[in-house]
Length: 164
Image 1 (tube, rainbow, N blue to C red):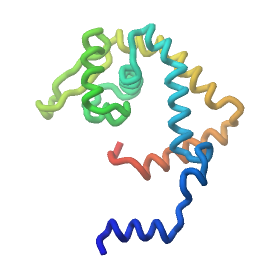
Image 2 (cartoon, rainbow, N blue to C red):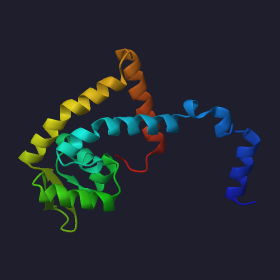
Image 3 (cartoon, helix red, strand yellow):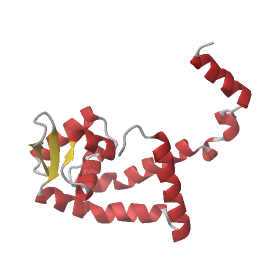
């Protein structure tokens, strides 16, 4: 019996409930996707006013905290596929919001830096990001928020493929 067959057999033996038995409202991946979908939708109009898409906004947000990332690391932090990120960075660079610089230690690698205009653009969007964030946690006390974030950090460690 191969590994895949043993895994399937173990799952059958454990009697994992089906999604219909769990219910969408009790299935964390579904809830996380709904929450992020609403969060992004709440920001869409403000992002559009600044000429931003979700990948562009995520890139600016990450770079506002960790400037000068390698493109592959920015892709991980911004949760954007490299090909999509590349197109977003082309537009951000064309708009003067970021600049790409060849890495000093590896001439094949490229680092991305926020420009002053990019930082200003992020600062214009930040009040809307903060407002959407606050709306998500309305009625949830600080201790519960901290516990929730700690749980999310543990889940991320369990599922991540990158050390960052």
